[in-house]
Length: 497
Image 1 (cartoon, rainbow, N blue to C red):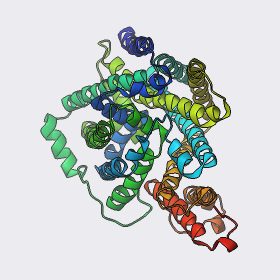
Image 2 (tube, rainbow, N blue to C red):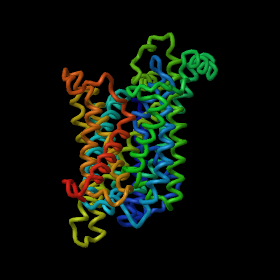
Image 3 (cartoon, rainbow, N blue to C red):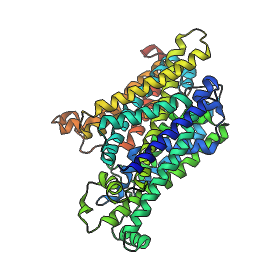
C-alpha cells in the first residue's frame, strides 16, 4: 500500500477515535453512554441503522451476486421483504420499547414472563452476536490482507482495537455519529469504484446497460417456489420480512438505536426510511457487480472468483499513489467497524442490564458506568479472540458457523410474539418453545451437512432450506409450541405456568 493510501487510512481511524474522545467528554451517565440521552436526531438514527447492517460482506460480496455467471438483481427481492419487516416492527413491537425507561430490549420479556426468559434471551443474543461478529471481523480481515498485504492477525488487531477505543470513549453517541461518517465513507468508496469502472467500459453508461441487459443481469423477480433458492420473490417477501422483523424488532443491536432517538415517532420514521435507503444501497452494490462484468468481458479476469472480483479491481485497477485506493480500503474498514462498534455497545448494555444489575443492591451510577466501559473492552477482546481462532478454520466452515450464529433472532422474535398472545402462556411454555425452536432451526440449517457427511438417514429430505426461511421456521416453532402447551389442560400439563 502506497504511503498516501496509508495516510488516508490512518486519518480515517484517527478521526473516528478523536470523535469518540470528544463525545465522551459530554458525559450523560449511564443513559448517555448506552442511549445518547435519547437525544439523537432521527436522520442520524436512520443512517446508523443502515450502516450497522452493512458489513464488509455486504460491501464486497453483494457485487459478486450480479457479477457471477447467471447473476442478476434478484437479491433486491430480499430488500423488499426487509422493508415490509420494518413496517411490522414500527407498528407492532416499537411501542412496547418506549414504555418506561429501558436500556435493554429484553426488559419487555422480563415484564411479561419473568427474569429467566429475559436472561435466556439476552444470553442467546450475547453468544450469537459475539460469535457472528467475531467471524465477520475475521472475514473483513481476510479482505484487508488481500488489499494491503498485512498479516491476518495484524488486520484483526488494527480493526478490533480501533473499534474498541472509540466505542469505549464515546458510547452510543460515538457509535451513531461514527456510523454516519462510515456510511459516507463506504458510499463514497463505492461511487468512486463505480466511476472508474464506467471509464473502463466501452460506451460508459450505455455500454454497461447494453452488456447487462444482454446477459439478463437486470432481472429482478424470480417467482419459483423452490425453498432451496435464497433469492426468489417468496423467500424475499415472506422470509425476508420475518427475518427483518426479527433482526430489527427483537435484537438489542437495533432496539438500542430506537431508544436513542428523540421520540417514538422519530424512531419509527428512521426505521421505515432506512428500508428504502438499504434498497438503494443494495442496488448500487449490484450495479457495481454488473459494471465489473461489463469491464472484465473478453479479458483474462472474466473467470475470476466472484467474491474476489471487486477487491481485485480495487488493487489492480484504481490509480495508485493518489489516495483513491486508501479511500476504498477505508470504506472496507468503515463497513466492518460500523457493525462491530454497535455490537460492542449493545453487548455491554445487555450484559449490564440483564445479567449483572439484577444481582446488585442499589449500585451507584458511576460504578455502573465504569463497569459498562470495562464490558465494552471485554466484548471487544472476545470478538478479536473469535476472529483469531477462525483463522485456523477453512473459510467454508467460518461461513457455515456464521449462518448458525445468525438465526437466533428468529427464536427471540417467537418469544416476543408469545408475549402478545395472552396470559395463558407462561414462562415455562415460553422456555419450552424456545428450546423447540432452537432444535428445529438447527436441524434445518445443519441437516444438509449431515447428509453430505454420509448420515442421510438423519436428513432424508431431497433439498436444503435456504437461509431466508430460518427466522420464519424458528419463530413459528417457538410460537406454536408455546401456544399448544398453554392450551393443554392444567392437570395434564407438566409445563403449568
